[in-house]
Length: 452
Image (cartoon, rainbow, N blue to C red):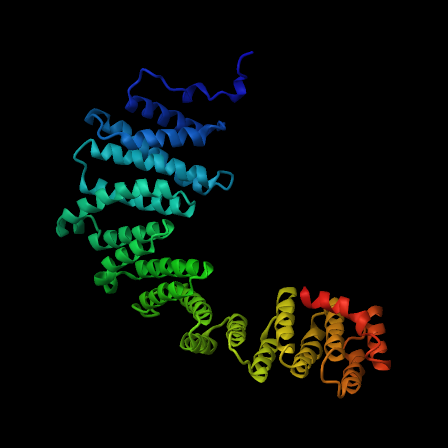
């Protein structure tokens, strides 16, 4: 039985064994263009692309007469990849492979002739964009291959005169800086932070000359490296890279940077504080607190900063329960109560309870009576009421339990006329009659509430 036609690659993708490598590549480029523009796309397309990428990377030079063909195919496929990138129905991994193939065609075409400086710039721009897309898709090996091509063109630009580049409206320092930033990113993805540091050192003399856009790009790259190290629990290394990101961003004034730069700086400092607070040295935790204090004074995202402060306090050998309570009261006054913020607040109240059940009650009562009445969420009211009962009845301090509960329950009908369900009401009544009688009954339910 023969192979079914639907599993065979289209005739346009089949290669002649007698054709020259360049002819085969151009035939594939032609069929690829038709497939990408009109479809359908065979299941083997990605594999075919990878095979032709390997073959094209081996081509040294082509005959000058073929230059136009190679360059035109590279240009058209590059433009197609740009359109496909905006098409949500197209896999970004496929776009990445098409872009790599197109970039290699542009490189092959340029090297076959004494290409102009303008074409050097064009190919280098394409290479830098291709490397970024490859790294975004974790195609490190392909990024390495294109980086080798980019190095060739960056070296050519070094030898170009300033007047020639000025006529083309470009600065070599900008291309050189982008190239080095790409090398830093590649070294990071290769897990070679030592190489990344070497490349970064090459930028030190030109950092103050970077335009604001490149300054932000570099700061963002260094931030991503630091954040990645923080995620790997390499807190000391993370803090170093985050410090570099912060220093780079401060080279420009707020007026020179984009509107997103402020959010980037906040993210850098926030992540740096989290890295520092997990380091074993007391001085680093103190610095983490100082960063959090500065963020508290200027950040618009108060909840994130206040939670950061709570986490820093948690790392101290001895926690001042009153400081913890004060931060939680600030959170309750300022947050927009949602399911997420409600659960987060309960999580930190539970931590406070391990230090002081009395202060935990103060916070719980404040949340119940001052913030929940406007939410119209009876399930939150019931969960919180049961949590309050659990906190009081399982507290090591027994004094005043009944009085505290009675005072709170006296005001509940006015605050929540329709929010108290039968289960919560029954639990409340049971506690007032005999607080110790309901501990066993409430504990499984309240433990589940605190866990959630």
